[in-house]
Length: 70
Image (tube, rainbow, N blue to C red; front, side, top):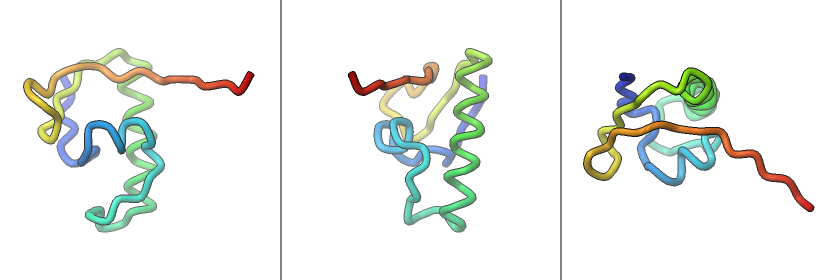
């Protein structure tokens, strides 16, 4: 299990748009790069995560979503 801590301060906004720059990050650009990298790793490895800022119980998995314009 991976404790993601403050990797994602918001369970919807920063998981759906991990490249977003969040005001509470000390280095917003680097935080976005790190978020994309770590979430990609968690998705690829199908690793369980715990998000302290997520609704109870805060445990789950992330998956990449590919959208295409038809």
